[in-house]
Image 1 (cartoon, rainbow, N blue to C red):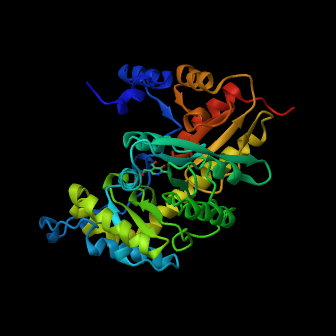
Image 2: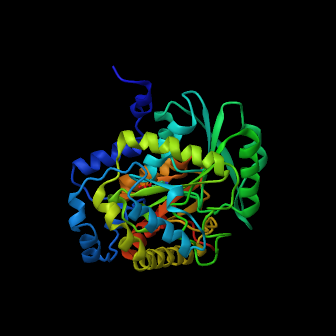
Image 3: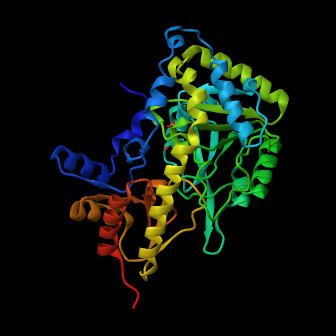
Length: 394
Ligand SMILES: Cc1ncc(COP(=O)(O)O)c(C=O)c1O
């Protein structure tokens, strides 16, 4: 009855099953994977946001496939504040970043074509590509204790085939938190140019560097010459995923960019997904981003520092270097499998953690934690994890 796109749905992870069971019994779950900013106890400028969404013009429907000019100008102003010139005519609005991926995959690739994505990485990407009939292959990120994560450029270039249509870079990557370095970007840009591939750079976490790791640049916008799409949106930038406003900046080769924009405009005209109120409200919302970003950064830093101190007393746990983003990766050295550990935490401690395998880590021994939960909840859950699996230094 249904298309093959849904085949992956059949195999549900036991952790998901167990979560569903617990929830159906009404049992509380201490969720250390929760990265929903709207349930993290942050103080939003709710009145300002509500009034930005409620102007009289919200009652007028004026379809604009690229997005309303007023919203595109606000996005252009955001890049201006980062020191980059982006014309409102060089960007296009979408109903969130996930939709942008779907739109780009339709634009760039035919069913059976290939997309390269980072590993470890954000699990949604392979599903989004799969829904467009594309094959997703993962290029490796390597970790070194001194320097953190880096792209294995050699393997990445060897993975390109005649059918590879795009390379996806997540900057900083989810969940590893590494920003793309200037030499990596230059090499990937060159590779894309050489093989007629597009470069898709997801910067949803770019405004959240860890204090100790200033990123190589605030954005990769205007730094590439292959056809490039830089994605971002309100979901992380303003901690407002429910607003469903994202965008893509189209850059690189000017001729190719103009052609891509024209095709995208045609495509978006069939959907017109982006709501009018959020577009009209975009200028004051984007201009007011610093307050919520300050709170998110403080939360992340507080939880990270607390975790670091606790883990410092353990012989079998350490945090991997995190340059930015909302997640941290904890390495745990014991004989227990990651799935088994996560299932034990849920059954015995009512605490949800993500095994590294959810993000396609190469081997066992990693737990991914959101740094966004309120401090007490985070400390409580992590204490349970350490009590169960930590081994104290002698
Ligand atoms: C790396 C990355 N890209 C995109 C998204 C989706 O963003 P949006 O809510 O704008 O669709 C997420 C959500 O967690 C993400 O982690």
